Length: 435
Ligand SMILES: *Cc1c(COP(=O)(O)O)cnc(C)c1O
Image 1 (tube, rainbow, N blue to C red):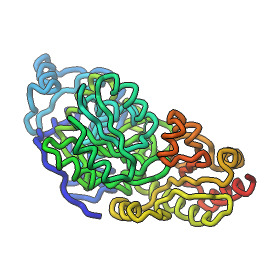
Image 2 (image 1 turned 135 degrees about the horizontal axis):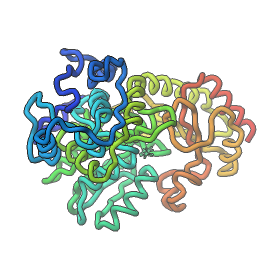
Image 3 (image 1 turned 90 degrees about the vertical axis):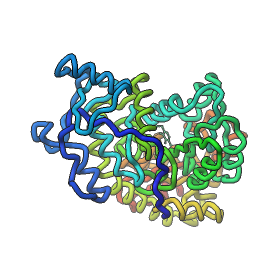
Image 4 (image 1 turned 45 degrees about the horizontal axis):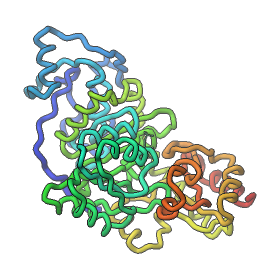
């Protein structure tokens, strides 16, 4: 995979977190990402020696003096930049709190090219905060289609009434994307969701970045990296400005919390996002930060195992007479799709969709007969889940839009978990046979 450094933009040094300004940030030499997520950002001495971070649930922080309170507000409001090593008091946890700062430091090594991270209380809170930071009335947002249902809703119910113009281009169509980015007036943001949900159609991130840079005032490029990141796809290394996650999915991985993460190559952009986050109150709460902090150390291992499981299950299902069509990267037939997959993903991932012979009735029957794979929305967790997008997550799209996006009535999406793949394969086969 080509790895080039992210573009350098104007950037200010990030304030040293007050509660651990003098603390070491991990080993003094460069370590690999799996080591860095376990060693940086946290000094046990500041949590009475606790090997894992304590949870700081306070809503407000006691100032050392009126002068340090004044200084903390000057820094928070951007009127002053802290000196290197300066301890700036924390203020109030809607702005920031120790668990968010620890987590944000630990997220940085997850993607090459990342220099700063911000955490939010849901994936949609991250995306909404990003929109409200980067877009103004009259601006255009170019985005791939289909988008995650909640993002689609946010664009049409919130951005459009505010006078922001969405320009949708079909996932995978690099030519249409480049044309839209070149032609739309006042493009300030390009949002690429790849692979698309639930068809897994891939969009070329590097090509989207090239299209953005070709404009005189290049818009920022954000990639919703929820499906393949952080293990298998690295948008920042491909030149994207922001890599956005619903941390609810693979990052947290246990269907027990909501969260959102934005990784960026330019700390200044992340600082702006944090500013909007402080106004909206979309920061991730201390308990959830603590939970996510423990989960990111295993995300790479979980994703690798889940992807391997999915590959084996898909292989075991190939040629089954009840399956009319598969959507999975190793089975892409389109040459351009195969090229994009090879260029930007390390592994095929743990999501696949299948279309059943027999339409919607067959799809519902299939879901009814599954015993191990449970019928629920969401994905990326350690347990296998399935859903019928056309009647649930994508039901807001009308039949013409569904058809254009390739979301058939017979399509069932499966997110493969950490069960023994042979049991999941047997479960899927049994349910198919029972249709
Ligand atoms: C789930 C999801 C979101 C929204 O995240 P929440 O944590 O549910 O708010 C956004 N994008 C994609 C691709 C998702 O799968």
